[in-house]
Image 1 (cartoon, rainbow, N blue to C red):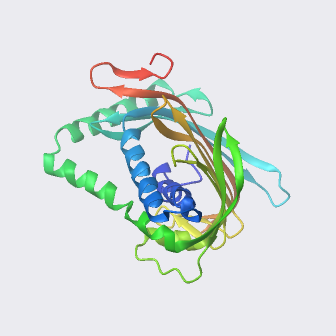
Image 2: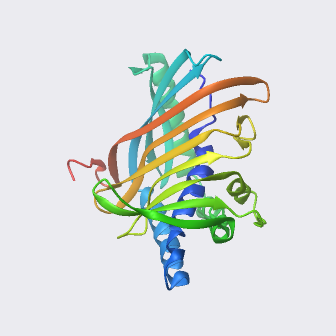
Length: 282
């Protein structure tokens, strides 16, 4: 199946942007600088812990005609595993059916090749890879300037108290990085856990066209992006749901009205001695 959207890694910028909006919410209180620094530190620490976990990712794509009737539905399921300290996505099912033996074997071979490649990387190459990952998150420092935040109230999310914050883009914001430009094009509402200063969920709306995956997938104004996280093993926050509603353009040509629902489950902690340990077993 050829998905309507680019590889999920292209949503990392969107997810991080929404996370960024959440971690600066406490600016409405006192000691704002100290709170923001703590929130940013917490998010970076959580990102490091995420690399210790594997899980399954199921994506369902639906296309609609001009009358709103579903014309096409497809799904695919991938397993996000840990190879030499970095995540790897392996396709395991299409339309909720296991891959045919030939395709499954091909996926196994691809994974073996990638494992061999990573195992033979020099220490410097591995360090450069991690540095690149850290560099991609630098634009978080720009978020306090990118939005105007208003405390809208408090709600309980999964039984935990959270602040509800309205986020409006700052028209005077001048982005310093490419990734930060997306912050000018979204507005919405975010929730932040009060006890851990971690983002819980975000409901964002697209104000101007957003391009993803080398501009091969563009979300038109009026689209929406909804994202949730959950606390796992009482130690880490991991993705639970990503939902996109959009009139989109694929590869500059095809226009589609689409819904993309991505759900995450089967969280397991990776162990070098025991490979993977399920949350239930732990």
